[in-house]
Length: 104
Image (cartoon, rainbow, N blue to C red; front, side, top):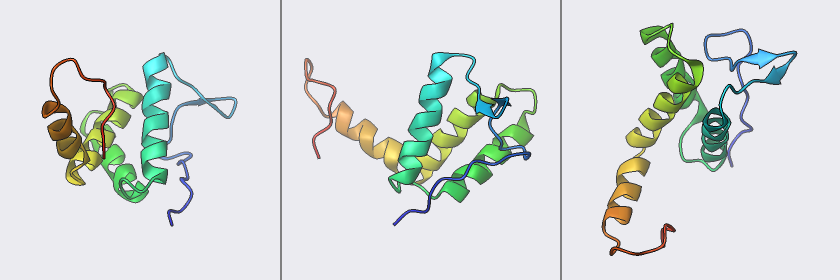
């Protein structure tokens, strides 16, 4: 069982907010946010690992856009867990003209 995802407030990992509501400058940012939360809740990675990767990414380039850092941290934890390589191999093995779903 996975613990509920808790978003930081008042730390480098805290998502941008306005009047307490999450703020997304572009649609992809909201999708990246939802993807990370859903993957974390599904147990694809430990949320604390993602949180630490996000903090490290922000520290490496403090002026970078927050959700660029968010997405790169997500890529990092998924790569560590083997999720990206596994999915890429499954997709690469599919014949041309296939659907985009992955059979498991």
